[in-house]
Length: 140
Image (cartoon, rainbow, N blue to C red; front, side, top):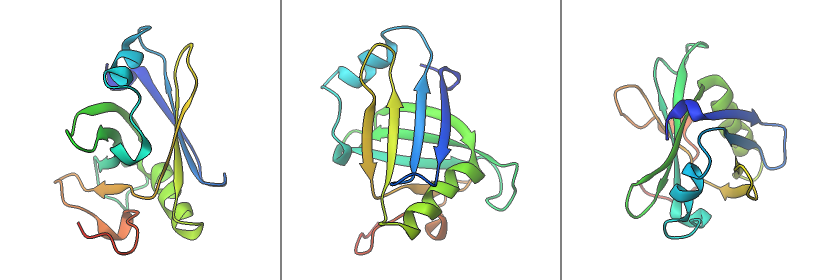
């Protein structure tokens, strides 16, 4: 699966704020990826944003990744506008500290993960704590 098989939209005004991912690649590909061991539960998925430029540049893009927490295996990656994705992090902070990741799948139900963590890394791979959504009490 390639990143260009996905599109991402954000809605920081939704309750909870949401990142919606739509797959438009070859039929069956996403279903196979998500069903090897069954669709993973929210607590088994990590959401990561890797910026591809400076965090304060409004033209910076990023790669949003969903991975299996225990193995690190990528479930999917999608390119998006960093400003839009970070707006969901900020909205989640101001709300109850959670956001939703919605994955639209062809001919299948939408998967919805409610998450409380979104780790943001700069282009060199350093964690940007001040831009990440990290629940209090969580030690990284």
